Length: 338
Ligand code: EPU
Image (cartoon, rainbow, N blue to C red; front, side):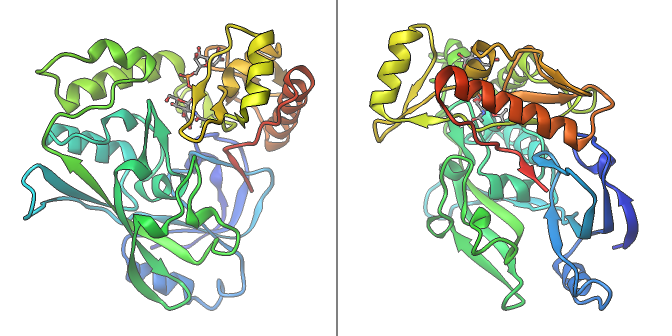
């Protein structure tokens, strides 16, 4: 728990864009978190909680305190009532992918499709990370939080967390800042019941010997081929959410663009891949200053090395304008602007 002043955030965010926080501290227990929140010099300042910094774009210096969870620990608890179920508990400060790797190594299925997603366990629960047909909310049992209103640690069951596509209770403006995630419990399975419906994972189905580690390996290969490594070219994964349109708009788009990929949702609405829209709006490789639309997956904006926050903001606006002009669709950032 060391409080640092005028802290450079470039090294703790995956965009690696320069910005400073007035104060920065990490904590490795709830007690340390409480002590930080009670420090007189910090009490009057805005506070933000940061996990792996993989979904944030600082557009200017932050005038408050950035707190980073370094609470560690991963444990497995077999369900006494059902011997095919295992509850896996990970502390908020664990790297999400270390949790997935540990679970897959132990032979438990459920989160292997979420391999290699950058960020921390705590942020994963806030963001409801998702990939290859699985969202964390599908596997989540409960989230342990520190409630800054009551100064107590409480367990929130999934039903209370208002999960949706990249959405959760923690992101609702009326609740924002109240809860700090301290641990996440997911429900895993000892049966190898995988979710392999998604495009390039389909080729794995029908193999009775398939293990969670095999699926993980394939997911890692797919992601490495398409997505830039933040340690090489700074980025925050998908910059935009995939827009959801109603049936009428979908049919009019499909009439015009018969090759457009899409996913039909359970309520009949249709999700259109923003990456495809951006590419077909002619923005593949577009640049502003040091920011560029990544060629292999246009949903990602990369920092080619010298980008500042304003470059990324300007490029993202340009992308939104072009997609609106060509397709009449509004793109909403998935990345959180600070
Ligand atoms: N596509 C293009 N051009 C592009 C990008 C995509 O034509 O530049 C097409 C692809 O060919 C494919 C379709 O669009 O037919 C979908 O692409 P992809 O499978 O890469 O998935 P996505 O919808 O673009 C979402 C998530 C990703 C996640 C993948 C895989 C969102 C915002 N993004 O992307 O999540 O890894 O599915 O499940 O939902 C992230 O959130 O950071 C992230 C990387």
